Amino acid sequence: MLISIVAPCYNEEDVLERFHEEVQKIADELLPLGHDMEFVYVDDGSRDRTLAVLESLSVRDSRVRYVSFSRNFGKEAALLAGLRHASGDSIVVMDADLQHPPELIKRMVRLRAQGYDQVIAKRTRTGDHFTRTLTARLYYRLINRMVDVELVDGVGDFRLLSRRVVDAIVNLTEYNRFSKGLFAWVGFPSTTFEYENATREAGSSSWSFRSLLNYGLDGLLSFNNRPLRAALWLGMGLLLCAGLYTAWIVGAALVNGVQTPGYVTIITAVTALAGVQMVMLGVIGEYTGRIYYEVKGRPHFLVKATNVERTKDLIP
Image 1 (spheres, rainbow, N blue to C red):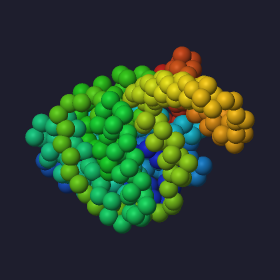
Image 2 (tube, rainbow, N blue to C red):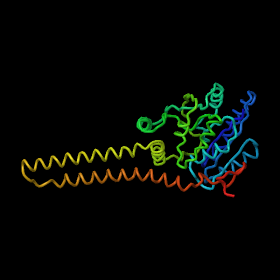
Image 3 (cartoon, rainbow, N blue to C red):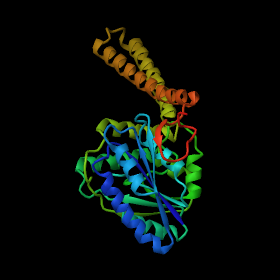
Image 4 (cartoon, rainbow, N blue to C red):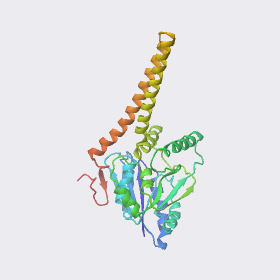
């Protein structure tokens, strides 16, 4: 059985050599068991020497396949490119910064042999800051009340996928991709095991608070229309409150006579309603913007250099 290692890379020149050494060791250990391995690296428009390192690796190891984007298209595009170029019977998706321990690949392969199409590694939050752990738990509790699939705290892209799962994922042509949700959406028999979180071997994470926030919003909006339904219910609730308040004002005027209304109440009500309207317009705008990108039908990525066959996303 051929196993493909798919590793998106962004500014990983300091750790790529070490990462490849580690996965090579796993490949050597699996070879006597009848498992061959290929390595599919996707350079997501890195600004350092990541591409040069990949070219060097491909010269020294014929199992290395690399794809380099014309610019930074994001991890979702890099992940899609890796899955498209992987030819293995099973595909392991992992980061190239060694936060995903390569030795767990052997455990994934054993579980795959038991018939699971997805073998998912769930990291514990040991060592994470308390506020980050609390924020993550609150986020997943909220999002699982809203989205149409179940997202599990600690579960990311690190997993082994069968060929039929990969084919299903690649055939989903939507432009706005949220892979964590897509993996859950396609289904198929799955199993999960836990592992302790590891630190980066070198470099720094490209995930800022802003990018994590945007990623969380993508997850919220990609698999449901409940925010739009919430806007409808909120509008109806505000309309009901306005009707009750109007009835109360008219009744008070009939009983006690007309009194001068308070300007503070008026300003507060107008400001609050304007804020609610802007939030609802923002929600509608997010969905409209996604439709806009889908309709244009642009490719998910463009390739400037590769040692594998050309794809439809490659500039001729």
